Length: 178
Image 1 (tube, helix red, strand yellow):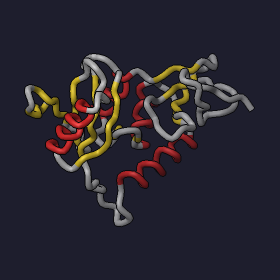
Image 2: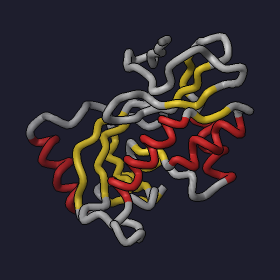
Image 3: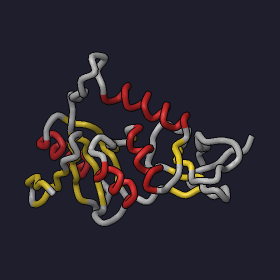
Image 4: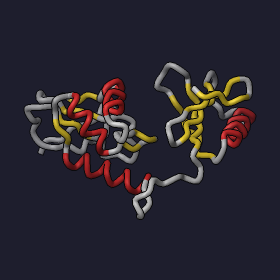
């Protein structure tokens, strides 16, 4: 059975001969940084972030939170690419989504520490995650602790992303929404 690899060297969930249309799939890996498409010629490409954004604009429930893709996002991307989804990729995405973001009663899971602290070089894809915190002030204290220990990446800004996709940038000691 033919297998496919992501550009960073992880096996993709889709296996077998390429189809006549692009197949949207994911890595068989614990964290997803990108979604992939296996083209009819058998080549593999990461789905452009602009396509992910377009899919999210078309369907507000087609979310991407942290390292999890809502299964609806795979369907919307496949529609845009005039392709199809890989059933195993959809099932794995659905399972991860349920485990990470839903309570057993079907309500959206509000995590105890909704702010995720990142060090980012703005305008690039480079990001270093430093954990989840209850408040923006907790994020600031952790960044200051890391800076004092010389563990904060040089030239990076502090960015906190709340689970509802709000983003805050630390500017002159104050968190600014952006």
